[in-house]
Length: 280
Image 1 (cartoon, rainbow, N blue to C red):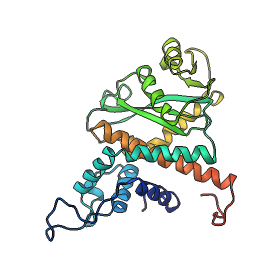
Image 2 (image 1 turned 90 degrees about the vertical axis):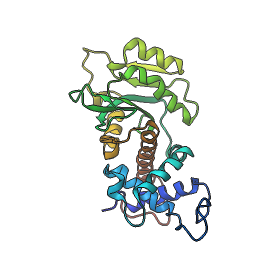
Image 3 (image 1 turned 180 degrees about the vertical axis):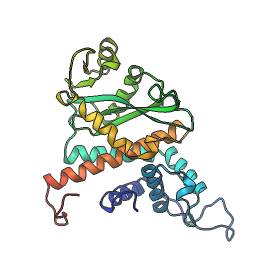
Image 4 (image 1 turned 30 degrees about the horizontal axis):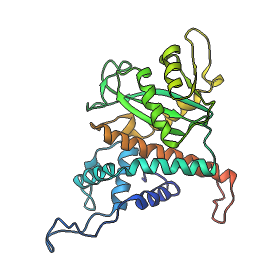
């Protein structure tokens, strides 16, 4: 069973491979005649996508074509080169060019997931009997397109993560002058407003005790985006111990989500010769 449909993974893979540095077929560190050819980047990328989607260990997807050690080594090389974050930003720029990001209204919220193996972004989860948990603080535009996320231990409060999340959002460029960030009551009326003001944003914070159905506010896109993120089982049950690796998988997951929305929206807005008859 493929991890992603071909209409989604093929353009993602092509753009990812275009970001990789050029290198020879053989490793220069090995003497001639005593080593094998490098495993293809395409093979490694496809297996990392499987790890992200299915949440399995590296040994589960390893085979004679690519070992688990090669997956980890190549993953770390790509993380050091910043390829995963570059891919996320390129997909966001493409979405903004063809569809348009709705940056006048932003939404930020946290999401609790499991982290049973501990690590730098694991802590006692307050919603799961203090078992190992991770929190993702994610920011989206008005349509729910993920603009950036910050991973933290499960026992971290939402309000201290707001500043780091807004800094991640600022990677895409300047925001509109009258942009508003919509927050739930956990961020606090005063703290949430002050943090947003430092980034030149207005804040609309929910107030406890006042009925505000989520469908009548502008915060519902972030709830849907968190649900999209939890479809990637590597994020829903994170077994990675290092922050850099978790951030890489977050960037890859957001690239998949954004590209999927871009293709679906483009099918409605544009016409081209090879346009499929059925919406993907």
